[in-house]
Length: 292
Image (cartoon, rainbow, N blue to C red; front, side, top):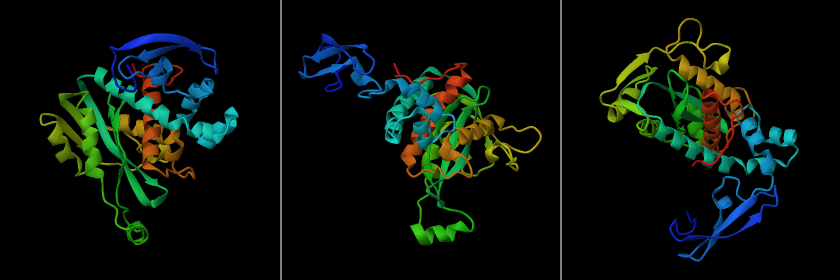
């Protein structure tokens, strides 16, 4: 498809060239409709990158608890080289997640809940709704939204940053909109006893069963997401949430590598979701690749 006029019927081949970074042969095309050229590389997530050989290593390190600066030191490149890869990796990851949702149908059991993080300071908290398939722990959907500070920080937050508009309902609506693509109409949903969930769930799944379980105290291990002793009915989600906190550097508790931009946190969540789902599927060396 032509990236300029979006046509696929007026293309003709116009020679090849060798890519300088790895000497790979790349096919050129010419569009007779808009009279512009492009190549097979134009549609790739590594378009115009000079150090493509580090991409898969960077992708895995992003998903194994390494910061951008640490990855740059390990590989031996400038930290800007690593930072520039976040956006194209995330764009590619979102396309792959969308394709995964299109291929996954009639999921019968889903567990969902919210994680919390913050933007720059604990006075600016964020909510991260997350949904996983109960049996496999595959990540199905997620989002990030702004919420108001609670407890003793509430007054300080309003005084310093003004009143924050709560986006909890908005992100929950978006979460269930994504889940609609994969869930069976009579899917069984499990969550904690939050009062925010039943109303939103019923708007999207009128015939679904919703099981709510009382929240339990967090264990010391598992980044505060795992629960103390006994059977945990929300184990699939809590285990996945603990892995997210452990494997995304800015999500870890007691870290100085904090989120400065919400859109960038969404990028890292998308990158990790692809890595996580590939591990679940039994792929030993997960990799980032273009969605077909």
